[in-house]
Amino acid sequence: MSYRRRRGARIRPYTFTGGRTRSRHPLMVQTLVSTADPGTEPPNNLMPESQNIYRLCREARSVAEIAAELKIPLGVTQVLLSDLADQGLVYIHPTITGHSPSENQVLERALRGLERLFQ
Image (cartoon, rainbow, N blue to C red; front, side, top):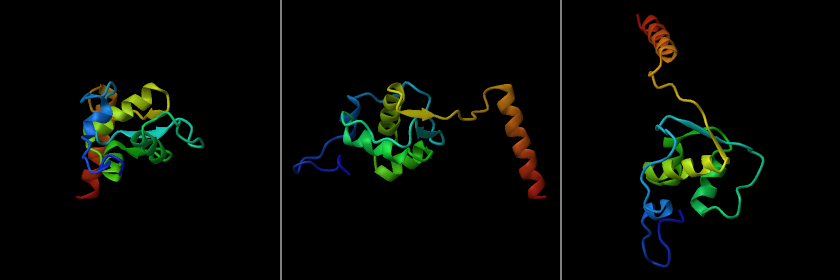
């Protein structure tokens, strides 16, 4: 990938984020992300890593899949995805966290269903 080696010198991945280590959006490893408009090419003003993320997100993918596919650390991937979301280029799909009563109900129903399958 483009961050691996440039003219023999190793570039630290966190230079892509300006040293930022936290994303502005809650992005868990299982959070799905997709492009807002899958038929378009990424803007030319994006860094190559962000352009690659944009291309991968033409199909909904998890944050973990994106990081693994591009061999970019998870934290860097989260920050770059957050930046793309701020620009309106990617859509962050809602993720069930189990923190609200309605989400707990969904998780409990799924658990009961799994228990029935394995009895």
